[in-house]
Image (cartoon, rainbow, N blue to C red):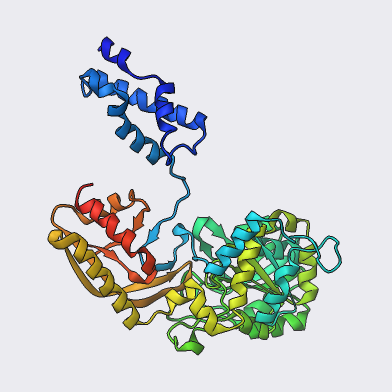
Length: 468
């Protein structure tokens, strides 16, 4: 054993070998040195366990294949691309909306070059980053003014802090929502400095409940869109129009947290089973301020968009909290590129991946499923049972809860490996492939798989089935 320990090559010798490999030479020497030390420690453990018994096994070229694979595995970025085969379009855990190509190019340009982020090209003086998208947002929505912060939670926080700090905000008990990450309306309200005044019952709230709650301590009326759940059955809520009229009577701002937000009218484009209010309609109904996410139904980057009447938006812009919540240049560039498509709903549907995936028809999905099945069959042969059958997708991101989207699934059954083991193996593929298990089959939903990803899907599944 002592002789074997003495045969272990030096770190510098292995480092020289690594630096001849184009796939690894770009890594910092300090990182490579630490990883090589870890690899050699593992070799020492194998010597002690008797797994390495001959000196020839410790030659540099003998160790090289294992070392190369070890290093390549550990230098992969922690933040990585994955293939979403789940059928959940706005998958919160997988990055929410996929950006349009034009938005990706805009974000890259913002990173690679200097920009007019806060520079007015007309005057040569300091400018406002918000002005670069405010006009576009107002044109699409019909709002008088707008502002963008880093997410919708921040938007709700700064709105309440600006318009209702140290005052009561009246909200229906049935709208005190909690969404992913333990974001709760009552807790955000506490942090904003406003006081919660809940009214009504869990399932039914009437206009009179709001009327009775208004006093000299009231600062605003708040409506929260229950974007991630539905109350059905014996249920009633007060419409935004009714709240706006009540707010005008008492000179109170009416705030709506739309959650997912939506510029695209799904019902007007033939999706009558998807009754989601649009931002344009909310603005038309007279809301004082509305906020929503940028990376959900809008199909853009993470952002919290605030729109409404100028007299309420201007104070929000001046709130010192705004600096802590402002968006960066990459978000700004990607958001502008995405918003441009919303000027033309048909173009938005074609160009914004989120809208394109949500509105795919069953014929297109069946064709995609059949193409994927045929490619898998050619590669995998009879090693796997492959079927195409009807299934359901979801919008995700809290939008259209409990609303299924008809799809076709590609189901795989393998005699030599369980569905759960297949799912676990595919999470370690490069890139990882995330699917779902249904009816004792590992299922791929073509709704969320781009055609350009089919070959990667095929290769990942081949690596599992062939044991590579």
